[in-house]
Image 1 (cartoon, rainbow, N blue to C red):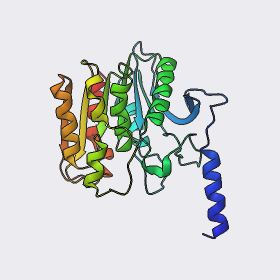
Image 2: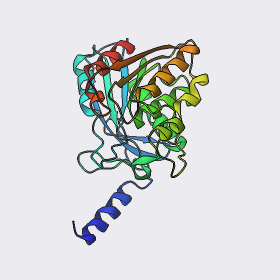
Image 3: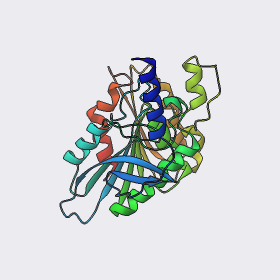
Image 4: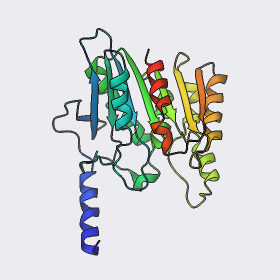
Length: 264
């Protein structure tokens, strides 16, 4: 790509992701959160059900620069396999783009240090609005990698918002994770889910999944977090999936199975 084209693309990306509330949020394709506008894709099986369960899915950091749509297939599977009243919303995190080139506003911090308190609160506010819009009786968060870190923090930072969570390949202890990754260059400001365990409501249910072959967020991080939850008396299950790496784990059928179980 020519330098001018690179500059133009960079400026377009920056402009698209700049702070701006949704002019007309419909809670189906766009939702506001703390003054930002987040792109969402909604999959639903309404069928006139009297009871509804809302699943909100948060993607990973997509450090390769790819569109942040890795959670779309999971959301579709939830709607296909879930009972009547299932609503699955795949959310594009602040500063990220979907496969059409549209961006959620806010900062992705170079697709790195971005599961910060600010971004987590933006997402949490958007989830509050979605929960109210869909009149959900139950809410389950599903996150992969950086999205799992955000979901885990939300359980304690915004207690009672979610009834359950499926955390997939979670860097739930950010300082330990960065040491394991050999990253000593600069301190991160991202939040650690393990620091919020004490504030997670006791009736919350959590499933922690990780691939045995995950070299990005090693299983020890998921194990540490699950054990911390259990010490608090929280119903937490650790699932280590053999033969699966960091990227492939989100496509494991077990993710959908665990989410539907927690949605009951």
